[in-house]
Length: 511
Image 1 (cartoon, rainbow, N blue to C red):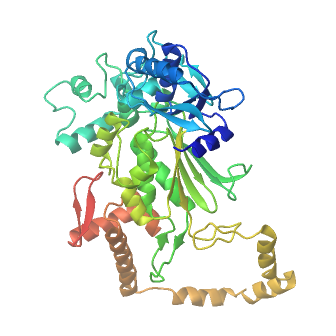
Image 2: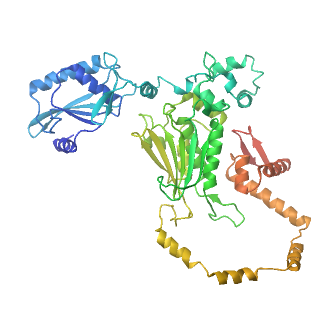
Image 3: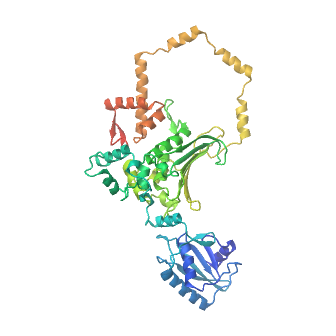
């Protein structure tokens, strides 16, 4: 850092990562400042600058020596656990300025000798007294795992026996009645129940009958807006999605897909088309939001669908050790270890940090915004097609003014008499209609060809996405779920497809 750099910083004044001090006379005062920076985002303290006027007054040689001793004592004795600031001195216009650089701590909360905890709030610091805020600091250090904490007033009766049985059959090949030990003991060993028999947060969110009765904020709120502003007063559709994690994922993904268009993308005319945002990208990001959200922030995951984009907003910013560039490279931090373990055994989740990479491979235009000030993580997908109300560019980011769109629509309007004449031309006699109906009678061969086309369509969809579900195949093909199941059974009987693994977590193989 040069003298000119310091002058530029002084011009901008104090903020949450920059502080000016004329002098320090007590090690305790320095310790409290070090604590506040370590518990927040780190920063720098410039000593020798008047914090009231911003004037650089400088320090004498003796003051530099005395303050240096105070800093060493504060960092080693006055802060728990100890911190290791970097101390430097620079000359600015012939005046000496000391600079203390403090990194964000990796084992918060940091406290003083009286057990007081401070964090930065703008240019000032404040003492932490709220228990939830203290727990967030503990969680950042890994010393506290909120998903293992019991939910008061719950018991084994609040868990869905079908979901539990399905879990044990898929992970152990045993039903919950044949575990070789009482079910309650097995659930305690897995941290699904705590030692007192109460359901943990992770256990309730994965296996609860109605988890939102105890945790009402841990759901998904989805809204499909008109236009591109969250401030709009009208919306096309909305949903409050409740249930355990798997249902939140399935219903949340289904809501997003129902709002999107399909594009031909070089496929033949009979194809259902490709989703304008790749399903694998949506799936990976939504799953990440559910697994890695902060359970210490009582807020729902939000799915916001606009004309030009889709946003998935998860409570909780990235862990302090991670940046957006880190996660793009596959670096991961398991904020919720129990959630990650259960998800790896019940969903298409690997826990290797590869989900973000797969999402970017399928959609390189995804934007990631780590919003530390709002304690949330926002992911933006840009839509690729035109939506009613706007005319989009290839990336969906471009729009035309409403008057231009109105002109385009207006050019297509016809007088009522012209419309009436066209309608009149289409009126047919019963004999004509009867003859046309007769012409539509199909032979068995024609019906067989149609069945073959549906089977071919399902084979194509499975080939494109072997991990797809039956419900998603129904959505993509336009068939009923029961119809899809019938055709899948026929394809399996004919030796054309094979199911590898369980219904949940397995995949299809086209033979």
